[in-house]
Length: 290
Image (cartoon, rainbow, N blue to C red; front, side, top):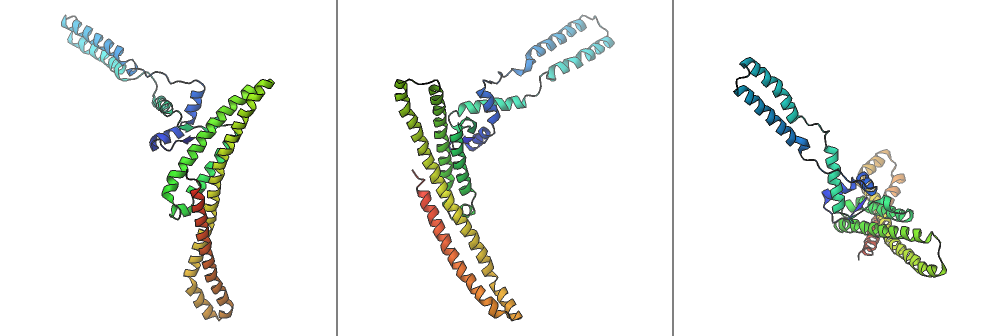
């Protein structure tokens, strides 16, 4: 499920966990009305009546003290059980589903269930979500080499907008296919053909959004490789003096020194490659902005 990033985080998490309830709702399920106190009031009335009856009998002197105590015990224990032991099963699951049901109704239109998308739309959404995950999970983003603050806002907004548009496209395309599946007269064909092209053009527009995200993710992936290699080279450079000591002690200077010099050159090239990759990623990011 994709949720509008404007939904509060706690509610959004609840919505993401509500797939099964939403599917039940799509099949007509509605939670049962909440029962009032599980029949406590009738049982309370019965208990009060029994106590009053016992009091009348005792007041009339119809029972001796021993019999009165026995009657209190025999009546008291069942009354306590009747009052405080519930006869309905625990309702935790029912309460949770009722809460989810209310949230799903409240936020209707602000979430997209991927099961509702047709095959083409589902593929596009999967591509978009993969691109977003690539950027969000990258080390260059976590370490602040990208604009991580803007990414945290822009990427969820892009993912939601793509999901929202694909949901509308998928629903309308399904209705269109159902209508034209019954056969078309030439007159209806003349009307249906431009509408079908409108659906195709809309999908192309969403595809362009997805491809822009993928280009950004590809640039971030290049920067990620360069960043990792840059760190590896820096670690090796930090130990150069240890290598130099070793080769000096072993008399292997003539063999090792050219390799160490190339290490420094590689570090410079990787640093330049990292800068170019980050610049390309920033440029691709600007194309995502409205």
